[in-house]
Length: 129
Image (cartoon, rainbow, N blue to C red; front, top):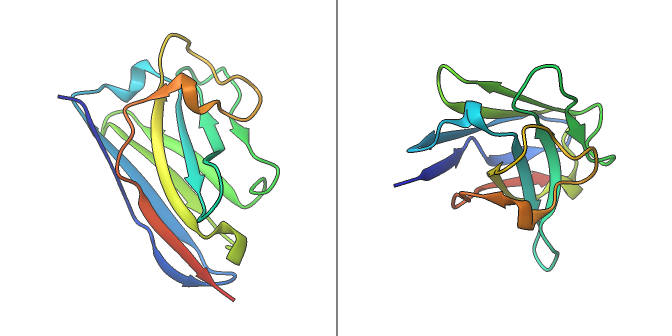
């Protein structure tokens, strides 16, 4: 049974930092491009960042997080990370990780939710002013 579990969220003041983790079981993340999505209350889920399966590919960041967030993966630990710095109240959302099946690289644009699978329950990030 495939399961992904996101963790590391919490309440932080604006300007603070958090590191999110996504640990997978029943799924070898080194076989997939992986992405982070987020969904704020009343809004659609949006792609935040994507890391390709192979290191020669390009990572993707949404313009709203570029320069503040860093995606990384530790295949030996089967874990995906999202380091978030200089957090803003607009970053408040539930954050999810997911795997892209069928392709080895990120699309170069915002990850499409329909292309990703193995969603976890998410981890809540709340940034206070």
